[in-house]
Length: 492
Image (cartoon, rainbow, N blue to C red; front, side):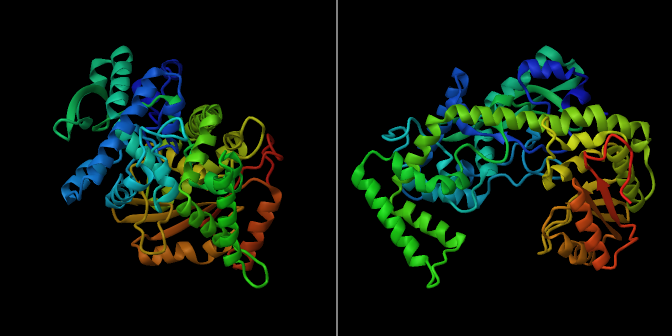
């Protein structure tokens, strides 16, 4: 079953581990991305060179931005990048397609170059320059945008990295010569150049491997939420007494201005006060980054832990428990319409989790449940391996995209995967999937709810009773508790 790179190419996972590459899924993106700080802080000289290349390109963009206006064509050529989907990393819940870096990102970066990146290469406060500054202040720029930008700028390296592995470990019939259009940037011609590489080939496209030690999950080491959380402690790291006092005073004035007569301050207003203070004193960002630089070892520790947890959840435990159990059940040979197939796959998945020990896939090494809705959704997509159906996401019609749409000819079924702890579960059961169904051409809709505690189960049953949905076959509950295992006992 070719769910992962090692499966599809007949490689022992230990070979990838020794090489240092992450064993990606070739069914669906996994929620990891490249963090540029890990390149900056690395002891590997080649990683430091990569980070310098990123900064060199930003310096080039800054100089062009300061020299005058640039054309729409130049903006798109220099700033807009497609997602490098062949690395199978990112936040796509279905497949490996992403939106890449469009005009909004381009305009955000271009407009901030003179403000945030004016001293690139000449920093006085931080040790180095950091692209992540952009996500601290520009709206709509997140870790996925930063990762896409970085991945494009180091594409030459990761293609060479993959080609070397392919040459040493794959057969000739498993690779093809692939031309990468934006492999490296020519500063003399101010244009991108293509290069040819012999890369792994799978289902009409090439595959790119990524070193594990440049990957992280959830967010970059330098990120907006962390800045907001640490903001009030940043002034204490500023050696200039006058600047420190001015920042504290200005911030307090902004807080007082937003505090209501009943002395209440909303979280939104506090964030507004923080950003107004940062705009008044932009050096705050540099002092925040300096703090993160000093704790750079923490970035590596968190990265290693996050990558390991991702491997355990989506790779090791999927291989060791879920796939064998489902294969024995005849799971991969299902036929029929999408509604019947979706129900059958959920039934087999339910049985594997509740009765065949696969509940362990949802727990870390300390026995704590990993209750992340997106993880469960990705897992469900992974076990649709071998289906004749097309598994996608319903188009966003204003209500937001539904989790999955299974299509085969005229047969279409919507599937929602939810955690029992979801605070909006009752509203979802009452309205959401039915609204999606009305707006689409799907025939039926199924809701699957996974619970990890008895109290979660009790809450779900109470909601179902309150909505008069008892006995509805399109509401599937999966018991992923650990306190009633390994026996196959059921909740009454």
